[in-house]
Image 1 (spheres, rainbow, N blue to C red):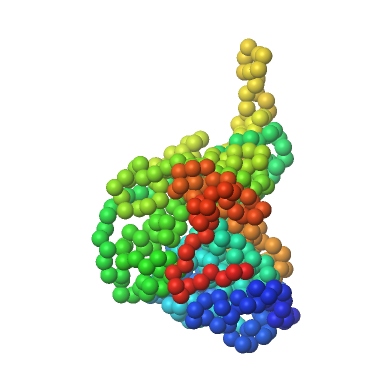
Image 2: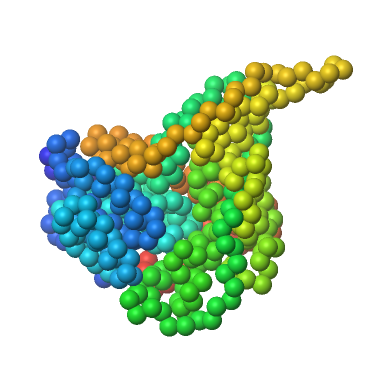
Length: 450
């Protein structure tokens, strides 16, 4: 196993070198790690991982990793002792050994025996663990959405690339054969000119959170650490665990939660960057509810060659094409519709100058969905750790999809069109909107400049 030099480890960047010792208050990589960097994994090694965040997706990710015999989980970190105990139990039952447990994930970062970390925290806690892991020579599997702001995402991408790290984002559709086939069909040109793409999520999850009162946090939870860089607020059960995603402090609602999945499919197939966005939406289904993000939203994102229409509703389960979620690529010849259950193509019509409808292409009957692709996504990450090739959901892809979602949310929050420069990653001519490209961190937490 080849050791890399300190300069290689730090990405050959003065900024990265400076940032390595100032990334967070109370965190300092050991002198040994800073001097030697992190060794790469060879094809014959057992791979040692750690899990940061052991809620629903954290446990699901952990179970997928442990399906591979070469994986050993050495450590788990979670601010909730109940979640921590659940994660430790999964490893004990699978591997007959007990991993180390921490409340503070930073204790994982200085360990040289850990090759990769899974980051499955709430969204507002994605950026810093990913950055620290990259700076201490660890590869990363991070849940979607990549970040809670465009600026965070850019720093994460820079940290991964400058430190030569493998970072896979948990947009597992890219590892599903039927999504791969559908995207290949879109790229083939059979649909003709695609000038409209539609994507949606209609989820019949419980939308109403009610208005629970603030209270003391559970005794087993380090609530101040859970808040981390987010604003200091009294504990409220509606803002915690799964439903954190309905509050701007920690996430971006359904637009970023499921948009990260479906918009990623759009970006994968269309290969263009956004140049602007507009949106409408609000709390129409649950107007008196404590949640902040829209329960109903329509967003239009402008690209150079097409427009993307996104729509979502919480508390309803039937969307376009009778599908709960999906992506529709509308071409001049036909329409391809895809979701997690499969895909098909419907022919467009041509009545121009004709008395009867003429169909422009042969329809493609429903192609059934593939299964177990979450595991294949994890497996792709492990394979890329060995080969050092880019994974299928490489971090820059996750950043591009999240950027579209964040632009739509900036537009809905400000109630106006947002013009975007994709090369500079800046809003054009709107100072107020530009402020929402980043987010303010609560002291002592700091987003490094990389």
